[in-house]
Length: 111
Image 1 (cartoon, rainbow, N blue to C red):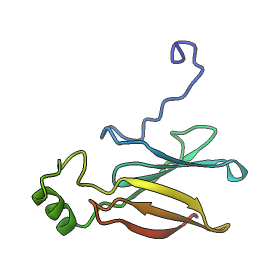
Image 2: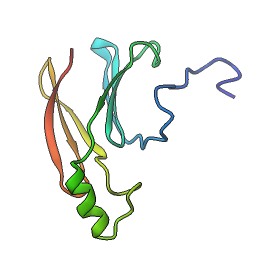
Image 3: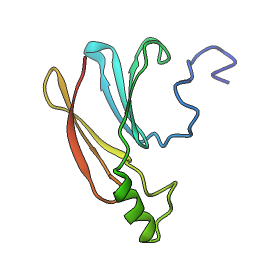
């Protein structure tokens, strides 16, 4: 119904069937950060398909292999699922992911 009434703009940034779970809204700068499987997206609030920025942040290959050897599913468990997006200061966001059962965190400069 929303598509038919032109009441929404679907995000076309990925056809990979990503696992969208973590969001950080930055109204002051007009952007939305989205944490997914192996990716972080920065979207424009006016048009989510305009000037999309994407960071590819997968788990280390050796961690993925260890995860698979432990009997976990390679597609649904052995990846870097972004779980934390937290403002740090005006220029950086603190980010953490599952890292294929070996959590990792870092700071991303927003620019």
